[in-house]
Image (tube, rainbow, N blue to C red; front, side, top):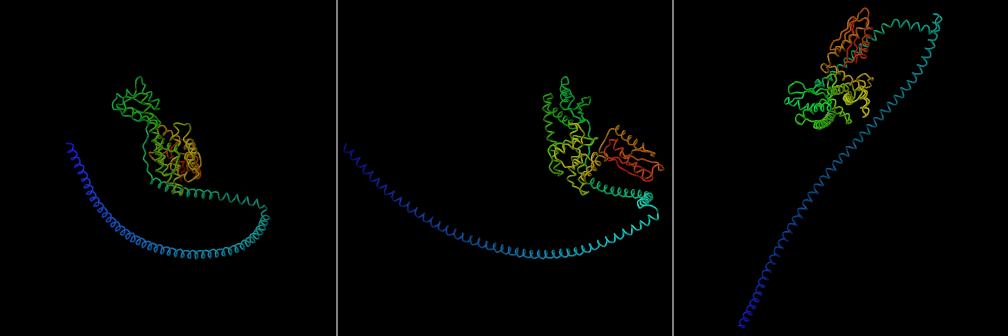
Length: 522
């Protein structure tokens, strides 16, 4: 049994060894085949790479050849262009040298002429001096002879002669003065009418009257009770915080917000509208909405002012002045919106200044700022002229702007074309029909006062105001008032109206005799 096992193990061992050698032989044969295949592939890749390399070198040589060719062409063109420009420069230099030479010859010729003229002038001066000396001698001899003949000294004779000439020429002088004044007035009127026509044809502004109340619509009348609140708590808080009067009456589905301050009234109206939409009407919510609306309005007026200045192209302006310009939208004078009036004046002044040879941009800037003080009068003491001049000076505005602020109300003399354009544009904007409105009582008072001033003069037969109080016609007695006195009377009446009467725009004083003398109270 043991022998069988040993025999079997031996056979198995021998079989394994034989199998191992056979397997190794087969593997070695396969490996050689793989090596040969790899070598063949490597040679093929090498040959292909060599081919590609050769092609690349050939392509590179072609590109280099083309580049060299293009470079040579560009070089030739540049060289030709440079040569052409060099030739042109040489020609210009020659031409300039010829011009300089001709200029020098011209100057030398003129210098020679001037020297000759100076010599002649010196000779003439010497001749004139000699003639003057001879003339004075002859004159002294003649005066000495006349003094002996008349029995008067030279000064006495001169005084008598001048008195006689003055008496004889007084009427002629008055006639010449009146004629010259009429011609100057006619020419000035033609020029002014042309400028005004040019200005008004280039700008046309819209106008809307400002009221003293705003109407707030309600969905139903139950909201009136909520606005009033318990024991009037809400309406008291509203009026105290907003600074307006809130009128709640029998008008259905509406309440009124009343105030002379347009800015406060606009904020109050917006606040009430937001409170009504929100539905929570109580003191805390009122303060919250009011603060939100106030901030929005401040941002809005600043943005509006910046937009206006950008559109007018008048340069950079301090933010505080920009904000005040935007705030003019909520200011009115005689029912005329201050911002609309300011823009109208700025545009008209720019056109007029350009027509008269002034600085149109500076005139527009002065026109835009001439009433800037009106944005401050509700919150500060003083008149709008002093307030406007003060704030413009604080922010380093031009002297022309300051002069326009004062001059458009007659507190300073007009010192520039731009200032004169602003004053004319301000009068034109305020005086045009429909621009301003006023209550009946003040209108009647003004008209009566103007007629009384005109009627109080000696020699006046009748005086009456026409054209809505913008002109007063004075009929004088021809036997008591002559032409020269009528001119003086027109000036005196105009001056007294300026001193005693408050009025928008200007008033024409028309004194009528055989001829009419017209002056304007500005």
